[in-house]
Image (cartoon, rainbow, N blue to C red; front, top):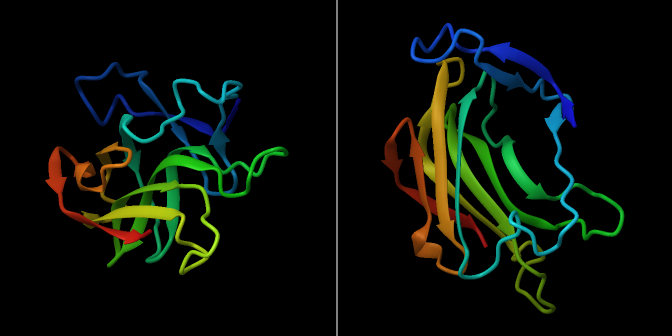
Length: 166
C-alpha cells in the first residue's frame, strides 16, 4: 500500500521519460508498505548475506541528529513482532547541516550487555549533501557479520564512514 504523493521527475533528468515518477513522502507518516509473510524470505538477511540498497532522494529539510528512512525492513511495531525487529535500513542522518548515509540494523539483545542499546548497529558517512540541493543518488552495501565490508556512496562518490552505534 502507498501513502504519499506522486511527483514527476522526468523534467529534471532529460534522459528519463517526462512522466517518470517518484513518490513524495511528507514526513507525516507517509510510506510505502509491502507485506512480508515469509520470515526467511528474500528481504531477510543474516550473517554472510550481502545487501546493496540504492535510491534517488531529494531532501527538503533535515535537522542535525534527525534520522529519516529511505527504506527499511522491520521496526513496524506490528503485533507479534519485537519492538526492535530492524533487519536492515537505509536512512539519511542529519550531521553538520548535511544529509549523510546511515545504514542501520539490530541484532538480538544479549542479556548482561554493557548498554541496553548495544544490539543496534549504525554506520554513517562522514560527509553528505546539503538539503534543498536537488536529487541525489545514494547507495550502501554490506555483508552481514563483516563490519569492514560496509560502503556508502552519494552521487557515485565513495565516502568514508564510522560505526557510531553497536
